[in-house]
Image (cartoon, rainbow over all chains, first blue to last red; front, side, top):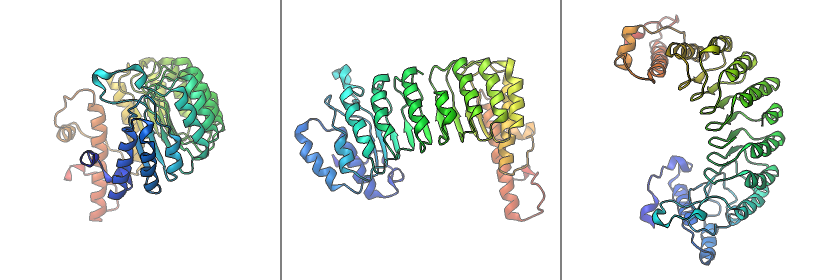
Length: 187
Length: 186
């Protein structure tokens, strides 16, 4: 595992520290390749060990169709500031299956329920999650209660006009959001 | 969506590219932003379905707005008919220092003029005096006059670079405090 971990890794992306880069990359790969709930205890141990060291996570895939419960990430990593998360699998080849991709209703619900409690999350990016109007309404409920997010990126999704209206409601009441990216949607 | 922006004050960057915003939505956005004194600095409406009507309201909006610095309206369907009003507004509003109008239905000359106006604004914002680059120097900087679509931007950038180099040079030499006009020196 360790030999692949440093591919395309720049310490500038991880607070200018090799230690942080290594830890964040390790957690990232663990989350991406987490297969089933059987390994959950081990994952929790790893997360606990890295508790105060993780600031920036870019999770570009979640390999199993039963997506990992993201609440443990928020629970174990209080310092998390930048989060990019894509539900989906990469390089599937012939094992392509439709359910591998996109956020599910249950994912959205757990994710949304985590949002009110974030302590330091300022940048949230959910690109390419097939988020539609129903999912966005669930997520917005969480975002409404969030007090830390200043940059929101919902690009490459399937949000249309009614979803945009829900986002508008959020934009209307938020006082801290500075960057909003809705690129590549269906508004 | 636009109505929310009417009230919101915190947003400084809005990216709506690759969507399906049409004239109606675009104009509404402009009008509502007009009525709100927002702090928006960067707006991207690239790759939508915007055309003339939008261009008109955009021009109106830019006349009044003071905060917008970067504007991206590339890959839309805006054509010549309202280009003059847009140019007017850009001339009038010196806060806009970056614009992208590529892949619209403008004539190359209009595009060049728009870019020139904005480059002038940009240089002004950096306190660099504006000087039009001569044709022989232009070909020297970018290596040949026949380059395709990026030509205009390349010229603008080259000009900005040349001017800032000249400025730096002047600063180090501590020569006359007068404006650095000899770009050819280096």
